[in-house]
Image (cartoon, rainbow, N blue to C red; front, side, top):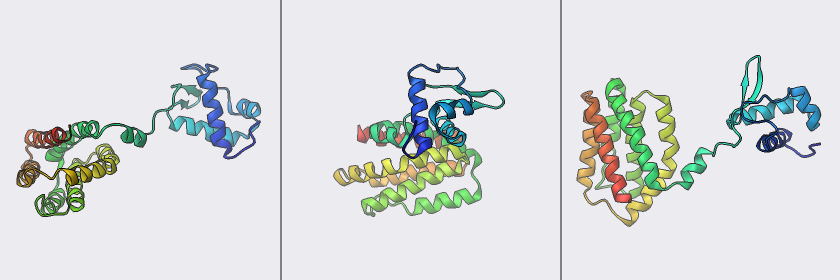
Length: 220
């Protein structure tokens, strides 16, 4: 019987161990809430919460009218843990994929309001005359404005998940190795904004890709 709290978390852990031990294999259905509650010595509400926790971790899936089924035997690694583990170069590579597509979509979907936000963000970014922290924050704000102009919530969420990792790495990098050509960097960002303004989807995607690839090369 489970004695300690939180009961639901403990129950989820026990169920996960039983799944990993092969008691219920991939595709197999778990016993009902009443059966599991009796086996574990907890209430049905605790079992229900434990199932929700495992579903959130991608281990089980509740199918309406059919029951709860095993869809994985391992818990997916936490996204923040992944970002802490991987190299900054790997994060930049992911940004290339995300932001080039976001720039393409922004050129297609941008509104007058988006353009005002982009131009404001661009005007606040001056690579040659800002403290490192301020420059990085202004740069992140401009890149986020591009992603926001894509009007794709998934891309926005992905970008936001990268920001803490990118911000600290960029501050460290620029503190040790100042930008070789601040003017060219400002021009690259202006080119991206202008491509979005004239709805040139190919040029917007290429401007984003080229800038981030250049950043990757500096970090490699």
